[in-house]
Length: 192
Image 1: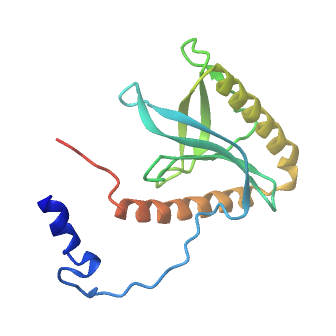
Image 2: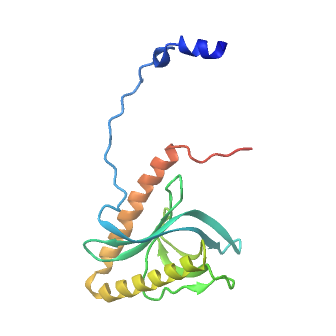
Image 3: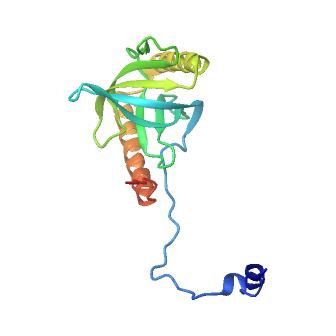
């Protein structure tokens, strides 16, 4: 009774004080270095990296792992962003010498070594493990991973090393900009 009647006489959205923004922000065009790429494969997964100092696996994030093919160079990279924050947790070309190994006998998990990953501030060697939802997804990931390695090896002679470094650096710069924007969003909640 009484609450419903009070709500009807409230006046809707116009009730209460109105504040003008102190600073007017202009819309800014942003780039995530993915505009010139097509998604060849996408699957939700959980990524881990091996911390050699602590001698243990550390969770890197959960999100969609994607294989991205550059429209001009044809080079394929593995890119994974964390859900919610969209922070990059893996960003590297899939190249010859990379191969997936079964992780601890699991049929839905793989381990591989990456000579240079661009997800962090500085490129560094990483040992990754990825866990997928089920064995079918894991088999599909392995098939796509191997196909992408073979495709990159086939065009290796056509792409100078400097172009790979420039592409990695550009992707890193774009990822940092995205990470800064995501960090401003305050998605990281820490409840005590």
